[in-house]
Length: 350
Image (tube, rainbow, N blue to C red; front, side, top):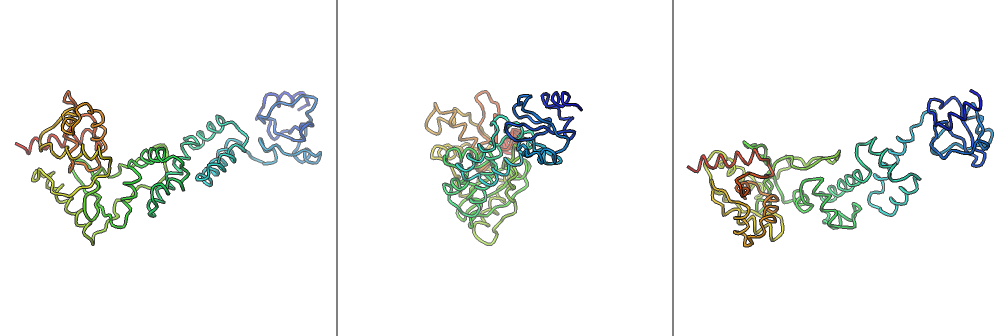
């Protein structure tokens, strides 16, 4: 290739010419590959070399963007991997992370594009997953919620709660509760799928679909194990009693549950949940009727949200609440499960 052909390749950022020659810019003292995306230099300031050794012997330094000193180089791959490394290392130090990310010398838009192409999620999404994974471990080890949030890099507790619920399907308080020393649990196979039962020494805390935790968008955090059971204390006995009563319920032998419950929630939610237990077996109420039962007929929307957040399925019968037009609407275990429960109760209520 002559100089004119090499200049045309540089001007076109022709990657097919990489390795065939290198060019140096006299005003910067840097040499590059033909495909380098750096700002195009003036023609009179460009010189050409057949090898990288020639360029370095002439006193030119390798470009940090296209890395002509490496035999094989994928700038997008290196940028993605370096970004991931920074997020993994400094997720809890906002100032340092911001400084190091800025020091990479690329626009946020470009960084997001190459990172998502490599990892199928944005740097911001990945950072959330790293922080929540760290918070999960801290909560498992007994840290208080504000401490876990702070050590995971959060300055805003509301943001932490939102991200934690999206990643795990539960609040930080309930997650921490699960791993407390005096908590026991087990998973019961039922006609609507496996249900996880969680209890303290004094009350049932949760009956939920096993595997309810959310791992969307590539989250790599481990799922909560289903066999972490303490069976040699009173709380283990309460889990067994709940299993026995649920088994009787599904066989049509039980209509009411005789279990102490302690669902975690706001005062408003707890009020709604207490009134759910007043809905008779085999019957239903609309959200408007439940709102009236809870003392605020105009709060049907808020009541609906509280109903959906009920952490103790079946024992607190949120499945008995339907839409004003008779539609089943949402249910934590799925519409088919709700349909099954209502049909079963009507059959056995006769």
